[in-house]
Length: 88
Image (cartoon, rainbow, N blue to C red):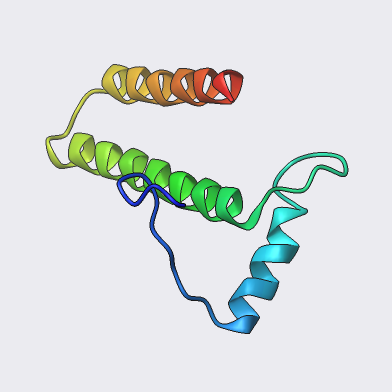
């Protein structure tokens, strides 16, 4: 039985499910296909990361941060992406 403290279910339209099946074949190189749940997880994590990056840069721009601060933030996000890719 599914551990309800760790997992939740979602309902999708048939079209969305088909789209996820297609995306599951495109996200990784080669002929590697992700499960639908991993495809959803990957897409959600990508969106969260984009939002985090965007928000961080907007905050720097609001307070008129120096070019050096922008560069450092860019390096931070670049290194966290590399670490995340190596972990999986």
